[in-house]
Image (cartoon, rainbow, N blue to C red; front, side):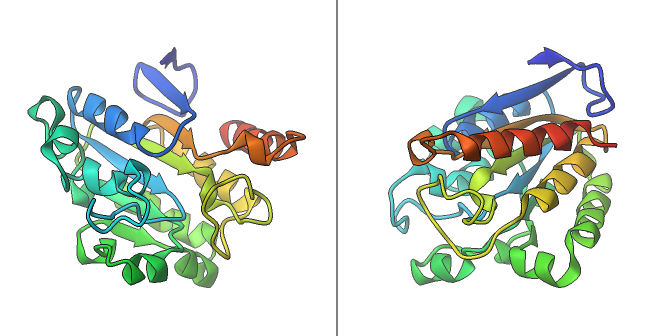
Length: 223
């Protein structure tokens, strides 16, 4: 946590959490729950909504959105008796492109909940500017104390970020991602951001990490 001196947060601090996989959200969201009511903007190629019995990997990283919204074993979903860490109606999922795969394995569909979904198909149809406007309109209607922004780098297109374990066609460009994150930061209500899912062993010369870093710098400094 660092002191905030920008328009990006009206909170006293802004957290930048780097590394690991999406399971870190359990600690983040359960921690925020002790401070108040927070929403979640979840940018990820995957729904991460599997039940443990349906997960093709057994990894918490493909169940984390289910867990933080209260679906799963109490040892993970009810830390400090605070289930759910975030309500469905305070969650927006952005950039999903694994719907067919998730259905094949029997995952619950996030569209059958109150979670708002802006998937890659919609982004392709409407454009990132229109989708971002819709996302901000949604969160402006939430009666919450702030928002957490989660960015999984596998939401980027495989052509520009192949340094991830699970690959799917399509995905966001650097320009789309920088614009989306920048506009969300400029709402002034983000408590912090987590950046996850990057395998440096798949980036031996470091150029992918450099490109992602430069994109995030643009997101934090533009406009």
